[in-house]
Length: 287
Image 1 (cartoon, rainbow, N blue to C red):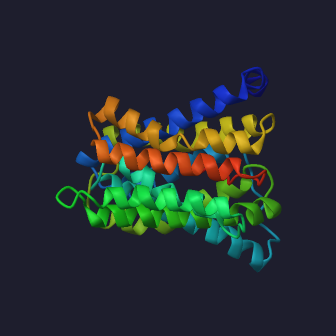
Image 2 (tube, rainbow, N blue to C red):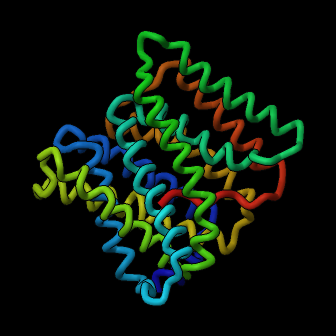
């Protein structure tokens, strides 16, 4: 019934709702850092997402070959690392800046291997955006920027492993197994430092983050992609840095400087340009 209702909604609207959901979840996650750590928040997000995905999927685990486990294990490692790195960067720099830098990962995948000279323009424009962020020596937190860049690299790995994972694990079973693996890998670090993890407030907010940042967008995007050209989907996804900044401003009161806004604009235009430069399949979004 839910799928039938979603099928009646314009796919562009579904993607925009998914983007808003992801970034609203990110703002709620950062608001939780005053109570618990980014590591614990990322772990709880994976735990709740895994539990919810398990209500829709029953992954077949028996009879899997070592190669299949290696692929989905790498997928889960990339997923967990990506979530931890971006949350750790949120704790140090504005969300809009972090997501802008992180977006260099999928942008790199989009232009990798291209021999079109015009694609070098988009690479240069993205590099200009990063350079602009470096023009604020007093405000720049290089550890935070580095963590966002690490998140982008892991996002690129997640993208590259999504295809092989999908060929071996049908439907949402691949992301379900990957989320479970990521949750197991992060359990030790999340629980090691004695920060509040199981208080009712933390658990309720983390559940909301898991729904907003993982389950809802994943479901909406799966429905939308059945009726949408990959190129249009990629262009819409390029709006994520702007959506991140908007929700950080509304929820957290977190503004950006003129230079940071200019850097974000460079990366967004570069991403749109790279997507429009061909009919290549766009990378899947994050879980």
